[in-house]
Length: 280
Image (cartoon, rainbow, N blue to C red; front, side, top):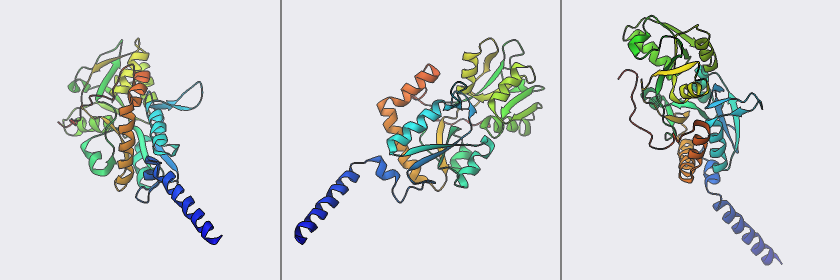
């Protein structure tokens, strides 16, 4: 009887190993190398006033947008639950360092500074900085035309950094209004309190396409900075696993499906990986 029990236990153990071996990315996500704030959960930091990337759906009161759907798909592919933590964008990277969440999936533009200070995933969305002007106002068609104008940006973004550079290094004089969220920036433009908004292409196009009587894209490609997922610099093992899931979602057409649904076009293919900073 003892021998039969030993054999039964051994067979059960082997079957358990076989089950776990077949779990794919789930095993990798829970391995000792991958550090998660909460076991079995991908905790995601984001700033939820950045449509169509991440925002609160007024009808449902729920988080919505490209990054929300992407985060859920990545977590599912990794065999994890997903949990979202809302934070001001100007504090989003400090939250990574403080282990308040595992990753930031919040329209994180890639530039050289962020490559040095963060662990970044492969890029998943094409992006550049653009200028949005009022349809019935003065349309800003170049960086030099920012002079003497009131310019709105979301604080802590690469648009904010670019505008500060134009002021400090290129000597342009304009009133830079650093607002807490992008919704406030576009409301300020609509009401005439600012002359233009500098923002990401996907966000600018969202407002232009949804409110064509109010806004126009008057200047584009100030920079080229595709979008990626960010983790704290030391958490490269997690980013490696996220890259595997990203590739799986791209290969399956899932990212293209989300992009076409939200943007009307596929911005996940043919991404220009040649970074162009505002100082170039």
